[in-house]
Length: 341
View 1 (cartoon, rainbow, N blue to C red):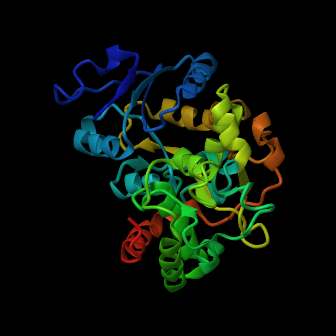
View 2 (cartoon, one colour):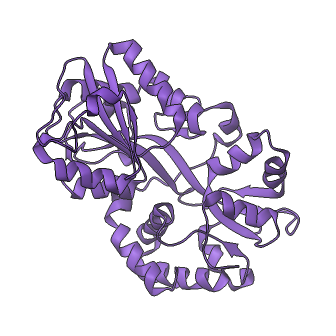
């Protein structure tokens, strides 16, 4: 597993000698699958506010889940943090999380963005939108996710592989809204409309639109913002050609997902873990989340970063993030049957 460690001394011996644990009233041990350098600002702000030193181990989400599971009671992990509801649900299913009883979290984090048993909490929002080629279309050619399967878009859709968690959660949201049979028919139609075999990341889908390879593409909103704010003129040109559609505004709202975290069962520093989770729900941390990766704040009333100001009136789907996790396995099987590779 490729990892990045902040404050390396605390990891001395972890993974080499069993039974290593780090417990101190002034220490928090964070295992995170968020790979944004801007999260350093979150750690520094928490340290200034509380005096608690944040030790960080970064890695792949599923590998970190397996690591914590393998370490068992000897794990030094206090917090596990990742992105996507499906990944949080996998950690929950592995028994990684302990419930956190906090009035702060219950009051500030909306119910759809947290586990019903308070095992994990969403702290930032990302929405999965549709991009369109503004040279091919004078105006947005669709307004609902369901239309991506319309035969009129045959050979026009660029989208990532079915093994991508973001796509799995999108399909899970469609199952919740429309049922499994209708969603499987939708997935079959989407596959028929693909402009090319699924490949690359979200930015590659947007580039496909700008290159004229596809009239439509699916990707998270912040990838377009990165291109639009880039110092590279070629990136700016890609963003300029790709129009944005926030689907289903006339109904349930645009599909959203979260970045979230929970306290690890048996955490050696449970009080510090609770403090950290509550800090992530503070106005200061919410603004840092938004500034760091152009994500929408999870806490209502917190102003997002300037780049998101044009989209503050967008309506989001209120389906519970836990439901997206519950339907993940169904979504994966459905996508496989539809031939989505």
